Amino acid sequence: MSKNDGMNYAPKGNVSKVVQEGEFIFAAIGLDHGHIYGMCNGLIEAGGELVAVYDPDPQKVEGFLHTFPQAVAAASEEEILQDPAIKLVAGASIPSMRGDLGLRVLDYGKHYFVDKPAFTTIEQLEKAKAKTAETGLKWGIYYSERLHVEGAVFAGQLIEEGAIGRVIQVIGTGPHRANPTSRPDWFFDPEYYGGILCDIGSHQIEQFLHYAGAKDAKVLHSKVANYNFKEYPKFEDFGDATLVADNGATFYFRVDWFTPDGLGTWGDGRVTILGTEGYIEVRKYIDIARDSSGDHVYLVNKEGEKHFECKGKVGYPFFGQFILDCLHETENAMTQEHAFKAAELCIDAQVKAIKVETGETVK
Image (cartoon, rainbow, N blue to C red):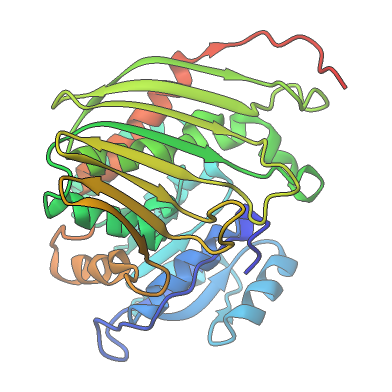
């Protein structure tokens, strides 16, 4: 796992199986984004058995099988979809194609676990809502910057315990390293990736809804820009937005592709959560100039100032909970309503965004 490349960042945790051998068999379809590795790691550590993979690109399949030799290469998507033993399909195809894949997966009676953004248009989301209502199957979304970060998980646990009282504001920053020479063509075209607020902004909006305990929110203001990547005129390298939740909590977030080369990881992702009785800061991937490891949580409340090093101590409970939800028709990992609401709001923020006129880049 490379800390310098966010596209292939695939955390590994402790094995904590929630099912017996043969109880939860899954496959992967669509290897366009490296998040598929983290998705599969999480499911395997929770007891899922990866048996097959399909992608039209044999090189991607070869690389996947090198990491997951227990899987076999399927000759077609249909071979996986028609296998009655497979209960779930994990997918990280090109974002604009993820919605249609999910519809096919559910039509074959399987659950779907998809990388974010799960959708690039509201029309895709509405079709997914109808299909989950029709089938009763899960459409899980991999919001990895909360679900697969131990510090972020621990922050949620602190909030649930009342450590900072009622959450009234969240501030999120999600900088990423662009690595443009290693990116596929679709990465630079919003028609395929949805735009910066729809794409990496989805992490931010999901964590806001979760930490604030909100069911809905309104996008008050959003904007996007291309400051530095003029050779890719459709690309957006900066975006921010302000939201207010149905319970009164407010949110500001910024996402960008300006991680400097000198940083020891792909992005200095952080979140600050203000409550009525204290505040929390999570330094997700690094504590700059002090500790190259991530998962640092800082808490200030009436009891004083505390620093928690969460690496290797908290785990990633989402994956086991999600497997059990698929098997028992429960919603303990994440409600379908929450997963879809975060997706809806990031699309709304993207659609409403003001496009900042940046002029020529000054070298």
